[in-house]
Image 1 (cartoon, rainbow, N blue to C red):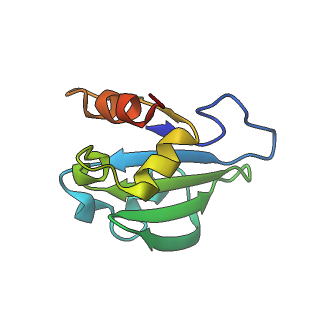
Image 2: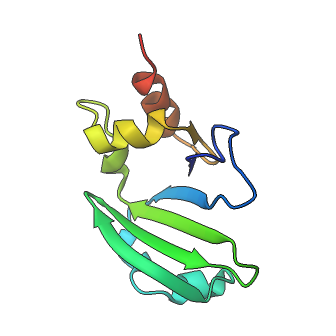
Length: 112
């Protein structure tokens, strides 16, 4: 899922790209080898945010890409975690959602 300024159409030239990746095997993304395989050789920071592990990387062009990687439980809607709600309401666009989990989350975060 694309989140943040890029997802809400407000990115500036100096904006980063924020992605949330939900997987049943988040341990596969421990370390930095997977990011190097994507062409992001420069780690900037790693930080835990609840069930998500944030990895921020700089590309060779200087673009910063932040990955929030965690289990599908991050998208639970009963109840919605306050941190998850903040991320989604700040801008979220599903990029791949084969079971509709992200669509359900985005809809549940919309004001009623």
